Image (cartoon, rainbow, N blue to C red; front, side, top):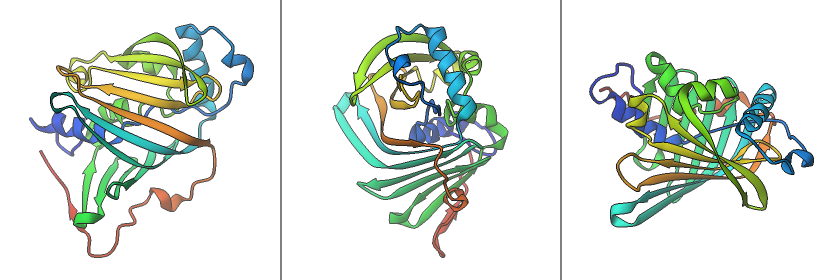
Length: 242
């Protein structure tokens, strides 16, 4: 997906890294109980996202990441913790069934797999706009920016984990982006404007990825070291290229 030079394999790498991460619409401030009682319109939801984006600094949450492959009716699940900071920094620590760490800090992107003692390192600088459209989807994103990259529709409201949520459907406007992800469905908490669940549909099949977030905490201090490469000595570092 994201590599230093975009070649014939470039979009495949972009898709692979993006689907490993699946991060989404991060807001920050609570709209309060009255907001949860409102009948939402699309513009109203985007306005609340704008408000939340102004206050976003950090977020931590538990994450459950599910991959469904329709042709073999197979479901695989990973779980762990996610840490996000507004200045293009993110870390996901998968703990089960196998340990794996995904780290983004600016233009640097890493995938660390302890089981094989390997770190894959990517530079996403030359493809920043593509990276941000997917990898940083909604990290304090304004509604106008969301509408710039996606056709956005309001798909309804639904209770999830005891929370009232609004559901947004995002269809990438770019043909290249749409060839990687057909559409995205997001369940956004009406009280906190944080995502509780995201579903990413692959084109040309019934396959999907689903990310489910719980125990969300916003604007807590996260130590700088959490967003720095902290791999053990002797780890094998690979820099895949297209």
